[in-house]
Every structure is written in C-alpha cells, then in structure tokens.
Amino acid sequence: MHPSFRRCLPLALLVLAACSPKPDEQSAVPAPDAISAPAPATVAVAPQEERKCSDDPQPGEEGKLPRCVGVAAVPPPPRAFHIASEGGQCVIEGDACTLEKPFKLSGCGIKDYYTFTPASAGAGSFTYQGNMMGARVSGGGGYTVDVGESGGTIQTAASRNCAGAGGVAGCNGINIRFKLTPIAACGAAP
View 1 (tube, rainbow, N blue to C red):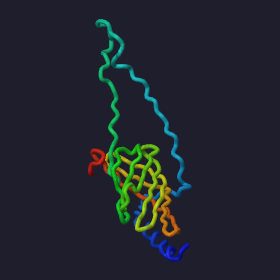
View 2: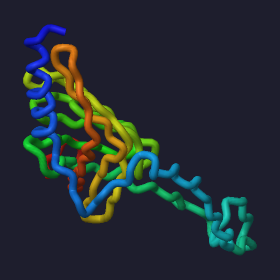
View 3: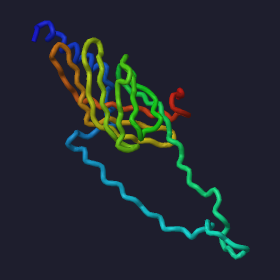
View 4: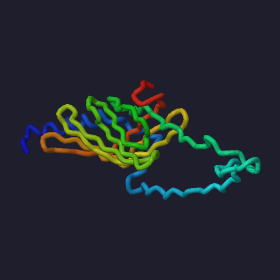
C-alpha cells in the first residue's frame, strides 16, 4: 500500500466515529452473541359469538335474525412516521409510510444512506453505505421497534460499521437510536 494512503486511515476512522451518533448508555444493547431469536408468535382464537344477523333467505316474517348488511371489519390505515437519529454530528432522517415495508433514510450528505428491511412491524435488519469526505462507509445489523400512540424509537443492535480509504479499513460496533414521530401522511412534515 502506498504510504500516503496509510496516513488517511486515521482520518477516515475519526470521520466515522465523529459522524456516528453517541450510544445511549441507558438503552444498552446486548452483545450479538447474547441476542436470542424472537419466539414464534402464538395465535389466540376467540370463541365464536352467537350470530346477531343472518345472510340466509328469510321468507315472510319467520326469520328470527335480521339481515346482515354492511358488517365488515376495516383494518386501520398504516401509521406513517418521521424518523430521525438521536445524537451524533449529523442527522439521519426520513419518512416511513409504514414500518412493515422497507424504508430509506438520508443524512450526513448521503441520499438513501440507510435502508431498513422489516421482518415484522417490530424488528428487522438494516444496511447503509456511502462516501463521506473521501472515505467509503458501510455497515448493517439488526433493529427493534418500540412504538406507542405518541411515537416511539428504533434501536439498532449488533451493528458493524466500517470506513475505508486507500485500501485500509477499520470497523466499530456503535449502535444508533432513532426517534419515531407520527405524521398525518407519508411525506408530511412532523
């Protein structure tokens, strides 16, 4: 490797560390080997209620139940969120129409910097890549979602973050926390 490139590696690693959000000490994330696979979901079956209406033909006045009209369960619309990183030297942010489909966030001067791929509304994996001040940065890991009526958070876990320049690379394991703010519609400001 050319000696002039070796001098760039410390700068690239400093840039990666400076632009990474600082870990939140109160929300410590377990080491990758301590993370267990999520338990399989169980499905609860509610007892079937006695019907209050009937779709069967009811000749005359013999029908005991009224006709079922317009009885349909409508699922709630997906919730949209504005997502922004907490801490760090630059903000990584964007909108997600739903947390159940892939979404991208931009930041630190890089469009579509982070790509989140949900396995469910509560967890998934993420990757990121781009160029920052001449250094190639990339990484990925898993994430979990904690969401309520007034918003919530996305916490990355088991991250592997790398930077490289001039054929020299280095990696760290900084995890990032993102704030979820409900928005009226996708693309709307919070």
